[in-house]
Amino acid sequence: MSELRNAQWTLDAIENGTANAATIYKTASELDPVTVYFIFRYIREIYTPNNPAATGVMERMVELTKTYDDLVKMAKKAEKDPIREWFDDTYRVKEFQGRSHELMELIVEKIEG
Image (tube, rainbow, N blue to C red; front, side, top):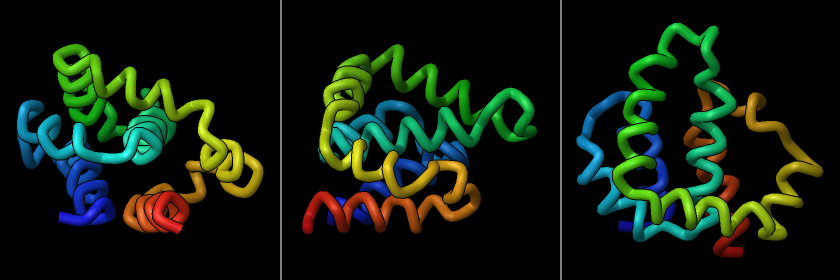
């Protein structure tokens, strides 16, 4: 599968609970660290405590990141990436609420471009 398809699948699986942590990890671990960073950031910024869907999504995130802490290390590494800086100068994650696939398209296009 392509980076974009894997990124979208990973984010959807975390959001919708369509896969277990082990299956999500298998796909997410093959992603670019910048992609993992933006998946985690999207989840963190969109699923705040006042979001009714936050409980299930955050439980899945906690299970994933506690069980597979190398994903957290991947995401942490990407915090200093120039793509993150470019994104922060141009966009806000909240702009992509309900449009996570557009965010993934933007990030993957920037990585591959």
